[in-house]
Amino acid sequence: MENQIQEIEKVLDEYVRPKLAEHEGNVSVADFRDGIVYVRLTGHCSGCPSAKYTLESLIEEELVARCDQVQSVKLQEEVSQELLDMAKAILSGKKVF
Image (cartoon, rainbow, N blue to C red; front, top):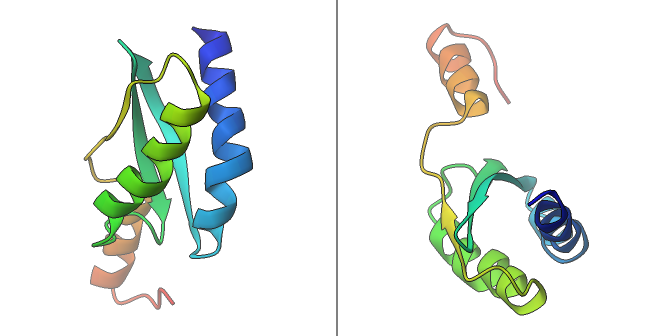
């Protein structure tokens, strides 16, 4: 499984992350099992209204095309620590931006 994760990370580094970085976003692999890659979107991509489109048209498209073992990609829909920290800062009156 380690080799599969390395291959997935390589595709993300080469084809996906540069495009997400243009919008100050990123993606991390949360898990890989049964042909499904579970990812988290971070940065400006976290909670973005276009996250589903990004997942389907960029991340899943690249991984399925370039990694034989990947059948689909799913968004792990939990609140990231980054988003929780930002919410706490806003609620406490700290300047976030």
